[in-house]
Each structure stands twice: as structure tokens, then as C-alpha cells.
Image 1 (cartoon, rainbow over the protein chains, first blue to last red):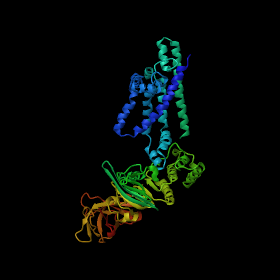
Image 2 (tube, each protein chain N blue to C red):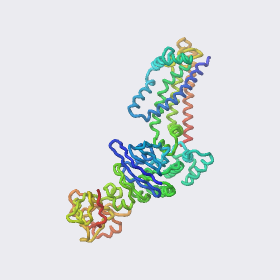
Image 3 (tube, rainbow over the protein chains, first blue to last red):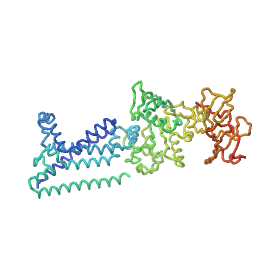
Image 4 (cartoon, chains in turn orange, cyan):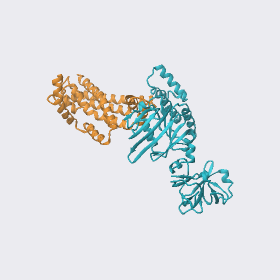
Length: 222
Length: 350
């Protein structure tokens, strides 16, 4: 059994989760305090990838990142890098579909964050950077953690946008989910079933990790 | 050292317009009913809110000046703000809450200084606890230790005891006063409780509907509050419209049907009579009038009697008289009496 799809899936999910963590947290912080109208509009735009069919997201991404499209073409010419049909394309797809999960859970956590803590920190001379990373983030850590796990899980299982943007090239862009589809399509049911088991194993491990993490946190901060 | 603030800020229909100076020594009180703009004033001073217009200076250092375009961020104002909720960081121990506010210093110095502050506020045994494990009083002391760590030039106390009552409040008040007495700069104490202000502040500035009155000593406020709102905040219970009497040296209170001897004051619209300044009197004494006793409310150490002057017009509010319990017990008649108020105890108000 070739383990490349597992390696590739985890690689894509890990990189995209790191990106989505920062993008989601910054978007949430900026929008949680924006005026109502701006908030309403941006909220719709940023949440759209969550409700759009992943194939539509993939199609839209190809529209920008494809080799003959503005951004994709420019990258290809300038750096000789292809933005579509590589494993990195899988990262773009995963970022696009998992971003709303991170953004929305982080925004919810930030909105319920007690602003007097930030105000107190400012009057005490603490920098806004310190207050954000060392006060607000730890206080909101449960929401942030939930968002991160959701984003990771979503990225790991991503199929629709990935299959359009990264395609299925064994040993290069194949992920667990595209492999399962490919194996089923070509009638290799036994192998497909083994990948399904791998998938179940990973999902169970992620959920277990979250539970353990939460229990440990519960002890350290009464 | 002094904090001077002269600021205006509009919140929808509400206009905040305050002007006060707090000097070293005992605290300046901002006394007002809830929603009168006390907390908003503190937020403007601390830099959490931005006033529309005005100037705020601390020891000659300009914190905010709309004309000069100065608006220092809260971090540079050195204003210690004691929040009603204390705003301790819940994920840090008491020790860490204090230590992170010390600014730049080496590790050893930081440890020493933290220990000093915790000792000053009697929190040595709570150093390793989290805020949620502390009592209300300990939380307040931890918040004060943290504020002192940041070396503020002025202390702002936002209703420090609003969430407490009884013995605990009394105890905390003594502790807070100890801190204030050692603090070298000015302090502003926001409150709606005249007793708290009387016990702890030397001067008081009354806030009414966002507008501040000139600061006065507590004794001045009690003797001559000036406005109905200030008189109410100072504890006065009886108010009625007033007009000049039929002859000089007399004032008339139509609602209670009274003509009383007292000097008229230009612009007066209402009279305030403190319940404890209305006394039982002999018939025919100066400013004495016959009354019916409508009902009686017993308080902890005194008795409040609702009086109805016999000449009062229908629908007039009752006139509350406060008597010590033994004086009440000594009254010969519990249904009717002659009450009087000395001319100097009539407060003519705008």
C-alpha cells in the first residue's frame, strides 16, 4: 500500500491550518469591532465558502489561479511556479473551504470576550500586541481551539475544491479523499475500504486529542 | 500634582459636559445617580473613550487636548483605573497579574517588586491562586496591586463597592482608604452613595445628567447643595416649589401651606428640608406648624414619620421627619404634633 496520499493529506491539512489560524484570527479580530454595516457585508463574503458547493469554490479558485489566469499566469511567468495541479494547490483549496470555520468560531469567541480586560490592560501600560496574544487569545482559547480543530478536520477531508484545483496525480497530488474516490471508481473496493479505515482512524484520533486537551486545560486554570 | 479635566462628549441624546480638578490628598468624589455619566467621564480620562472636545492634563502633562490635537493612548497616560469588575486576567495567577504590569525590569527585580506589592496588599498567601479562587475583597486588592505595579499618576475608582454590602463593604473601604492614603497622586472616586463619599472623600463634584457642578467640600454640599439633584444626592428627602413670602424675610411653600421665616434667595425654585432638621416644637415657636402624622417607618437607629401639615394642599407630598428612637418614644402624641424648621436649615434650591 502506497502511503503517499496520507502523507499528502496531512501535509496539506497542517499547512492550511496554520494559514487559516492566522487569517481567521485576524479577520475575526478586525470584524468583531467593525461598524455594523461593514460587519454584515464582510461576514457574508467571508462565510460564503462554507455554504457554496466545494466544486464552485474550486471553479472560482481556478478562475484566479489557473495557468492562463491573471494570478496563476503571473506566478508561472515570474517564478516558474504552477499554482494549479500541485500539492500546494491542495493547500489553497483547503484554506478556502476551512477558513470560514476558523473565522466564525474565533469571531464568536472574540465577541464574548470581556472588553474591560483589554481596556484594563491598556491603562496598565500593556501593548496592544501583548493584550491580543497574551490576554485575549488565552481567554478565548476554547473557541480558538475548537475553530482550529474544525478547520483541520475540514481540510483533511476536503474533496471537491481539491479535486478541481489539484486534481488526482498519484504520488504528487493524491490525497486520502481523492484516492478513495479514484479507487472506488476503478473498482478497487478492497483498497478503498482500507483507506476508509485509515480515515476513520485519523478522525477518531483528532477527536480524542481534543477531548484530552480540554480535560488537561480544565485542570490548569480553575 | 493634580488631574484637571474639562471635557465634552455627545452620546446620542446625552451630552457629557464635565469640568473638575482632583488634587493630592484625599480623593475627589464624582457623585451622581446611575446613568449620569460618571463612568463615561472616567473612561475619557483613561483614554478608553475619546471626548469630542476639551483638555485633560495630569501634573501639567497633557493627556488629551482637542485644540492641540493631542490624544495619548491609554498606555502612555499612567492612569490607574479600578474597574467595577476588577478586570483581573482570569488565566494568570495573582502574582503574574501583578508581575506583567511592572514594565521592563530584570527578573530578580521583578520578583522582588511583585512580592513587595503583594505584601503591601496582604496577598502573600494568594500569590499562586487564580482570580476566580479569590474572595471579592481579595480580587479588589489584587486589582489594586496590579494598578500600583504600573506606577500610575492618578487613581480612578469606578464605584469600587457597587457589588458589595454590609460588613465586607465596610472592611474593604478601610483597606482601600489605606491604599489611597499611601498613594502620592490624586484620586477620583465615582459613587452614588453619599455615605461612602462622606467617609472617604474630601471634595465632591456632583454630576447631573452629564453636567458637573463646581466641586465643593462635603460639608458645603450638605449645607448648601444649590440644586435639587445635588440636594437629593446629599440625602435630602423633602422637596417642594417655593416662592417669596408676603413680606421680606419670609418664604412661602404653597404645597405644604407654609409661610416660613428665612432669607429669600434670588432664582430659588424649590425648597429642600432635611428630614433630620425637622423637629417637634412647642406650638407658636418660630417656623412651627401643626401636622398630622400619616404613617411611620422605623429605620435601624431612627424613626421616619410622614407628616402632613394641616394647611397642605390636596396631593402634596408628605413631609418626612427623622427622629432618634428615644426622641420618638418621648413624643406625647403619635397622631398630631407641631413641627418646626430653623431658618438656616431651609435650603433654597434651583
